[in-house]
Length: 214
Image (cartoon, rainbow, N blue to C red; front, side, top):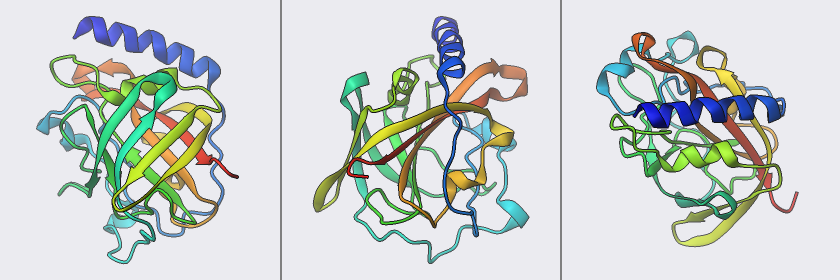
């Protein structure tokens, strides 16, 4: 585990040096709860989860407007993850799938392929054994890389990466979860530093991609 964590720390330095400013259009008029716990799967970590602004839960009528995603691929970096719907935990955090090889689609927001808003996919960077997850590959993503999302009963949708940034978990913009404005795909995983006594990873890596035809 320590070896993997050292690799991630070095990658985070690279990410910080190359990161573009996260600029998502559209005001988050009804933000959903930010994912505050994307480290190795461990139930105790959920105690540090953030709650939705004002204590409000996700809206039942959140727009999907597109078939559910089933797989996400970024061939340039070797990322290939199964995708399953994800809601929120009892404490208000995004319920990230436990397995590091599986990504979660935040089902209370837009789905990939929707005509507006930020479709959010989340995943663990590693697990409690130190094995790297599929989303660890996001540390190598570059502007222009192609992201393909395969969907149930529909053609795949394709995006291209426009930014990668590292932000403290407490400062993850609520706009990541916006339901209005230009359509984007947002991929989120954990980022160093890793501080066990403070619950694990203290930052998030955020990758933003826009529809390939835009």
